[in-house]
Each structure stands twice: as structure tokens, then as C-alpha cells.
Length: 210
Image 1: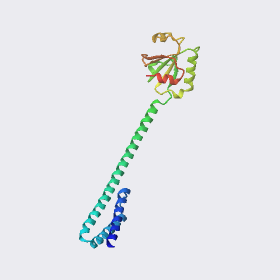
Image 2: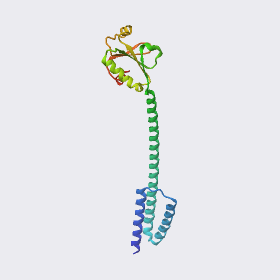
Image 3: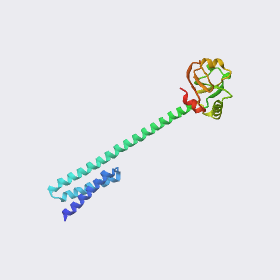
Image 4: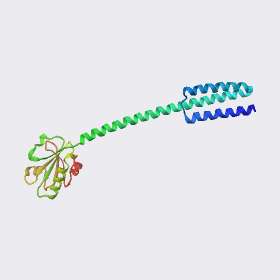
């Protein structure tokens, strides 16, 4: 009968160790008091056991304690890893948001849509596109209307300069423009960067700019 009681107690202790390891619960002050009480109980049980079985009980108790310590260490390490991952994730997210805001500010409109006779190239900064426009050209008018409808979408570093195709002969000759609705990207010294034809939207110009 006594051996059966001891066996039940040992099974209970094993179940306690299993839960401690798998649930990974932090041992509180209350848990510590319970552990002390159990240790006192184990000493009483050990005293009642034959000498040959006392060593086995001591080994089992040591194994239980080792499992509890391992579980506590695993929980601690896991918590540190989770906290580190959260902190790194928050930092990455903050940096990404800052970069996105900076990019958005750099590209935010409005840029400018001006007539060639109203400006000098040397006074401009950023990207400059000359739009060789003719009032009798349907595709030129479509582009003009789209730009006027989208003035707030012109990137802040872009100036679109409308050039009269019929009157600015010297400028046409300089850039070898032979037809209306031709776009020429230049710097503020008038140096050619890129030339293309067509496109009926502001977006088409923005996409072409180098």
C-alpha cells in the first residue's frame, strides 16, 4: 500500500514537471512557497522510503528542478528575442516612413508650366522640358489641356516650358525640331539632354524625363 502511495506521488511530481516545462510559466513568489512545501513533503516521503529508494527520489527531484530551470531560461530567452524583434521592427518601420515622407516631399507639386517668352532658362532650376506647341495641332492642345488640369501634379523639380512652334524658329533650329508636339529636355544653360515626340498627358512627360 505504501509503495502505491509513493508511486502516485511520483506520478504527480512528474506531471508537475511536465507542465512546468511545456507551459513555461514564470515561478512567482506564491509558486516558490509551493515549491518549498513540496520539497518539505519530499523529505518526509524520502524518510519513509527504504534506503535503496531514497537516492532515486532525490535524483527525480533534481531532474524536476532542472526541467523547471530550463523552462524558465527558455521563457526568458524567448521574451528577449521577441522584444528585440519588436523593437527592430518598429525602428525599421519608422525609418521606412521617414524615407517615404522625404521622397514624397521631394516629388510633391506643384512644379511650373510657363511660356518661353515669360522666362529665361538661366533662371530655372531642376528639370526643364521645352514643349514645342502649335495652336493648330490637336495633340498639342490635348497635352496643354491635360497639363492645365493637372498643375498640382507637376513634380516640384520640373518646369514645362511651352514654346511657340510657329515663331521660335531659332530655337527650333538649335535643337533640330522639325515638327510640332516635340519635347526637348535641357539644362538651364540650354544644353540638350533628351528629345522625343508625342505624348498627350503630363504623366507621359514625367515618365520621359531623365
